[in-house]
Length: 66
Image (cartoon, rainbow, N blue to C red; front, side, top):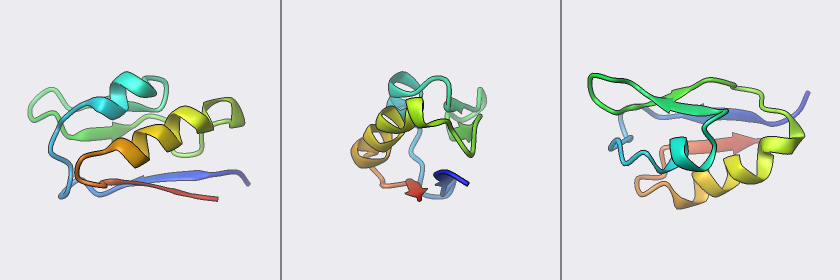
């Protein structure tokens, strides 16, 4: 098993950076902009973008477990 992406919807402020950096993995709900994980176990080719999204999230709502 590879990396697993988890989010804390209560912490998410809807900034959208994650969806811009890794659109294959993250999206946002239309009604409030809260993060939606499209691929909870992304392939290795997406991990750099996922890690960037996690480290630049303003509310630290994204975590990546290896």
